[in-house]
Image: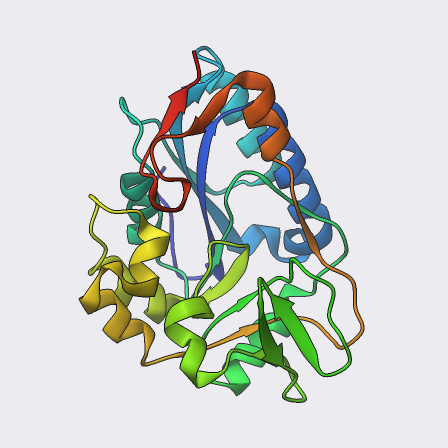
Length: 252
């Protein structure tokens, strides 16, 4: 749909597949716990790949329009995670973007205006992602790595920016960062892996920025993965290497 971007604050970029029950749970949790106070200044940009329920496009549209007045939906004819990722990022017009895949649940309230204020105070911050792990007194675990608490957020160390600076977890992103990266993404490769080394041009851009994780010391994890059970129940898996996949496949 066409939109007036003048009062737009946050573009929510979402890659999705046709699983309305998962989309509903994700949007409900994030709207209630994060986006509701600024809903009129948000726009959902969602790409729905043709994987899952073959006749649920109308259901997906009903769910989207039930939470957001402003939205932009794409139903491509063939699935491609890199193309879906780029399509959403390429449509960002707001000063801030919130990267949100369709299978995450937000467990506790998050003040997105506080997140924006934090990033305004730290102009080199490209992203603040929501924590998947519980934080400790002085650090936040990120997979097998540690991000130290800097007094404001959990900061990705400089030597880990390429390895762990950007992740596909729900994150607030600076619009300028999204624009710069979108011009460099290769639609033939897994987009997340390109940030970590599969695309020299994108890695060079990544290294110009700083990255962090939102939260306070001694706090619980904020997000939960709700997509794994659906994939097992419906017999879908990532084709080829899970780390480098570009599309889904049905298990026979």
